[in-house]
Image (cartoon, rainbow, N blue to C red; front, top):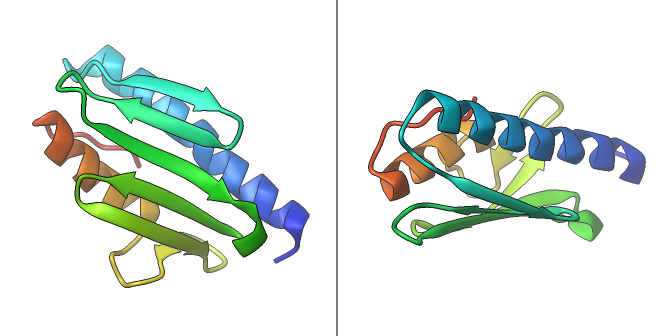
Length: 108
């Protein structure tokens, strides 16, 4: 994957997260505050817990920090997969966000 291909794919992930937060806030009582600064998005939940997603450009990875821990994702040609076997990025984000929000949330 070239640097440009990585940036295009990773930027698409960040846009999908922002759109999902808007949809979740419209459809549920989750009240997620999403703040984006460059290649990093911070999701803040009403209980003040956070999930931070940021791009790691030199490694061509996306990193996520949540209460459940820190996770690294690499693009496998079709999906962003956790490098330690925790699954696909959006499914894992949904699980972590649901746990922190106390509501079933879907980011896919």
